[in-house]
Each structure stands twice: as structure tokens, then as C-alpha cells.
Image 1 (cartoon, helix red, strand yellow):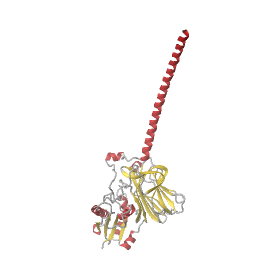
Image 2 (cartoon, one colour):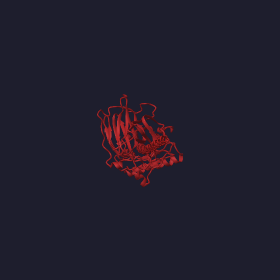
Image 3 (cartoon, rainbow, N blue to C red):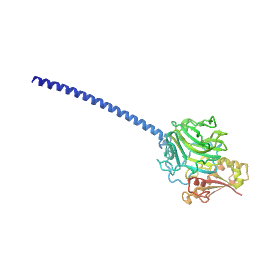
Image 4 (spheres, one colour):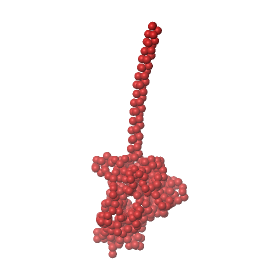
Amino acid sequence: MKKLLLFITVFCCIAGLQAQINIKDKIKNKALQKADEKTDRAIDKGFEKAEDAARKTDKPTAGEAASGKASTQTTGVRNKDTVAPASNNNSFKAYQNYDFIPGEKIIFEDNFAADADGEFPAHWKLVSGQAVINKVNGEPSFVLTDGNYAKVTPRMKSPAYLGKSFTIEFDYYVTGSDYGAAVFFTPSDDSEDKILSFSKDGETTSNFPENGLNGTTYPSESQEAYYNKWHHIAIAFKNGQLKCYLDQHRVLVIPSAEFTPVSVKFGGIAPIRIRNVRIAEGGGMNMLDKLTADGKIITHGITFDVNKATIRPESMGTLNMIVKIMTDKPDIKFEVGGHTDSDGEDAYNMKLSQQRADAVRNELVKMGINTSRLTAKGYGEGKPLNDNNSPESKANNRRVEFTVNK
């Protein structure tokens, strides 16, 4: 009997000790579990912040939200030159010395308005990294989301489409946490790409010619004012010489690039955001020669806000050239002709083309040309230069012509 009582006592002690151990283990495991959950939540938040930074979502900046200037997505766009102003803060006065003139024939243009949000754009090829159409401040943009380097290139019929003279224009959006954007030129000898880089701080650099050349650092404004907005880049290449513009500033001149580019890519260290890409043949057009030969000047360098007659400030290069011609030849008179593509209703296009022709005439008058020397007429879609079956053809049909009035 005593042995039985002793056995029961020992058994109870062991059971109680085991229960205490189990409780301690449960407490420990619960604590570890909570710690793991806390760590997981911290990691998840870190990933979310990183992803937000990489994507740069389409929420407006604080300043835009406060001022009520946040953009909305554009739909049903007709006869647009660009989706929205690239440099809202830049006035015509700031561009008064701008001398960039785009090439005469557009061979590629894309503002991404026709591509679905979240998809890869139809007129582009992915070279490396990842990229997708997304909205930046409500506007459709091509966002290179991942890669070092991420690269994309236009879909062209020929792998070599850049001639001895060409121009390239595009807008890019920059924040304080970005690296910037870059243009990669493929040389005709299939050597490594030549790179033209635009840092987040506005500095323009190249790895060509042999030792590379750096451009003037821009902006003169504060970095905070430079960040979180769109900027316009324009590049002119003619017979080996390269000129590069950032907004209204000429930031780099390379007298001899020492290579012949045949194609171009866009990219850099992601994230990168671009839009309103335009590539054109020619550049630095001698307008006076065109006027003498044809009796008119056809320009694609005067561009407007979407569905409006508001002239964009980077049009000043072409407008300055027209003013110079009219100043040097005081007897010459021009009809300013506005032309659209075939998108939209005929009546709408006719009205819009007239408004744009009036806007150009009025701007030239503000620049010192006597109003008696200028008339304005809108032709709508009635006099196309090309068919309207491709973005490039439509872009060439959207134009302003200056025809001599006798």
C-alpha cells in the first residue's frame, strides 16, 4: 500500500513538472510567434515602402493636392501633340533664347494614350529589366520599374533608322530618390552603346567621345523645385555634332561625337518615367531655303496642349526662327495654316485648327511682328501630308504651315 501511495505521489510530481514545462514552452513559443509576426509586419512594410518608391504611384504631390492641380487621366484624345504640358512651370519668357528645331519628318511618335494601364506598350520592345504603362500624376506614362540598366527601344521596321541628321524629344519625370534617365545610342559598327545620361540633379553627361564630355549642371533653381515634375529633353544630331537641351537650357554640345548612331534605346537605373517620345529625320532645318524653294515652310515644331490651342513653350525654337525670317525680310507676309490629323469629327478638327492658327499668329504679334503681315486659316484634316494609318503619319499631318501671301 505504501509503495502504491509513493508511486502516485511521484507520478503527480512528474506530471506537474511536465505541465509547468509545457506552459513555459507555450509561452515561449507564443512570444516567438509574436516576435515573428512583428518582424514579418516590419518586413512587409519595408517592402511596401520600397515598392511604392519604385513605382512612384500616380498620387499628386502635396503641392498639387493643395492647389487642386492634380491631373486626371486623358481619354478620347484627339489631334494631340502631347498628352499634357511637359514643363508647366516654364513660361515663354524662359524659352525666349531657345533654338532647338525638330526634324522635318517624324519617324516615330508615342504619347502612350492608346495603351492600357498596366500593359506593355504596343510600339516598343523590352531590351532588359521590366517596364509597364502606368499613370504619373494621372497621365499615361512609360514606367521602367526594374533593372540596372533597364532598356526599351521603339519598334521600327529597320534596325538602322537614324540618319546623319535626326532629333529626339521626350519628357521625363524625376524625384529626389531617382538616379535619372539615359539615352543609349547604338553605333553603326555594333560596338558598345554610347550613353547620354541625365542625373536627378540635372547634370548631363556622356561617355563619348573617347573620354566623355559633361554638360552644364541644371537647374539653377532649388533641387526641391526641380523634383517631382516633368522635364523636356531635346537632342539634335547633325553630321557628327550633338546638341542637347534640358527644358529651356542648352546643356551640352559635343562638336564631334566620333561615331554614327543607327538606333536608340531609353532607360537607365530604374525607376524611370518617360512620355511624349518623338524621333524625327533631319534637324536644324534651313527655313529660308525651304521658303525659297517651296514658297512655304512646313513645321512640326509648334506643338499644343491636348485638344487645345495652347502653345507649348518648347515651340519657341521654331517661333524664334520665323520671327528672324520676317525681321530679316520686312516685305514678306505669311498665312499661318493650322492642320490636324483625321481623328475626331470634321467640324471639331476644323474649329481646332483655326484656333491653333490664330494662337500662332497672336504669339508672333506678341513677339513683334506687325499684325498686318499675318493671316490665319484652319484647314482641319483636309490637306494631309500622309495617310492617317499610323501614329507617325498622324503626327506628320498635325502641323503648322507658313505660306507666303502675295
